[in-house]
Length: 330
Image (tube, rainbow, N blue to C red; front, top):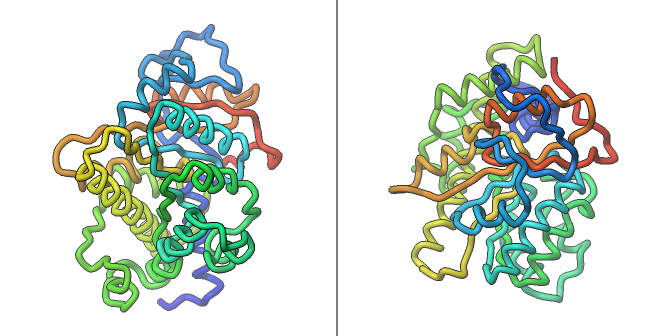
């Protein structure tokens, strides 16, 4: 069944809401809490989910400095999460490292202009945004994310576009994965040799979220949304692994780690991007996840479920953004 342009745009928006965790952070798997009931949580704390203990930024960095890939998962347009990411980057560079910043907010097609803007001084901000297609590919105020671009520019760090092109994801959402593989855009972005793994655990989690946040949809709608999600996550994994292979060939102890900055839904429970990266790498990989979430009084039990379900290796609690708490699904 063919869909109208309006329906396709709607599907893409829904896919973003679910997979990038734009909507609420309802735990995916109910679990029994095992954390000490007297623990007091507050914004600004970083929690190691293995021990369910609060750690300092110095303790966190001791772990991150040993990694090849660090995944930071945000609530979109939350400036407190940008500040947390800047703290990580400052700590890494302060330790003599040269991290590579990979951002979901830019599509592969914008990499040339991203390089031009970060490495040079002859392109003003508005021309950069126009050429990068910011309003079409991401949208919202660039000023929220500008500090991440600015630190890359100031510290001469490599900044990489992590997201597959929006037209490619739109193609999958409109026609489904099988038909998209036959289209010219699939080959244009060197996807013809890529295996899009339909992992049962990943499928279960994504479908659970889709039905919770977008109930009443058809099976076909859920399927194409799910397939578009797989393509986005697999495309991000493809980009990260390419960077990782380059770093390994370089064999420079000061180079890296790769710092992946995406919506929290792309890293939760290690299923979306981290597991796909691990599947693509030959041998062991050192990678860790850090999930940033707004925290306010009343979310105590939600947080405990995130901890015991181990939504990530670390959880960074922040104040609520000016947009308020993320919308919660039923």
